[in-house]
Image 1 (cartoon, rainbow, N blue to C red):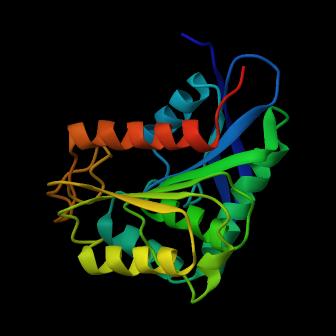
Image 2: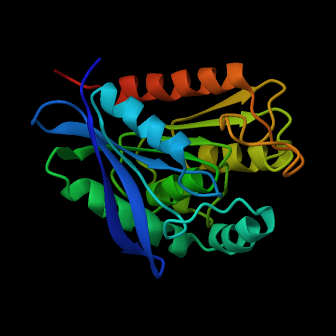
Length: 241
């Protein structure tokens, strides 16, 4: 197995001190990089392990923070923080840009070859970076099919892949249709994968539907969604040895 190195990085964003997880592949050369965003509950070991897995594939990966080092297990607290955030594209962009600056200034990062991958709120942040005109090679969002301000999706300059569970009550068919209509009207190279029978946050092993209805882990689809993300990166942001 490839030897990777990891470290914690602190940086300011949204009035907080964010604590991200940076994973670096073996070697000293510059590599393509991935900005990795967590679900609304915040950065957890799930996203840290995914960043490590991306580093093993040869990418520099930064799993960014949403809540100043906190993981919001209480659904009410999480919603109280995330709903205003999701309604404020400029705040989401601020969180994304702060993390992107950390990733770009890492010496191992090729600043011209960066993709954004995110889950839930973290996926919405990645989309807002695209709508802000950031030069990304790809955007992947799982569960985070959030529409933006009118017309701004035309600034997205890379392929967009979105994944969602067919039984996700938080991202229901109407939300999917609004999102894909926005992408299509903007001329974006988009695709949508609907995973049959899956709920919201189906990719996240620690979620429990007893905590919040409509949320639950689906092991097979979690693996498939990860493979789909890795395939997108291989297509749009290949690692060249």
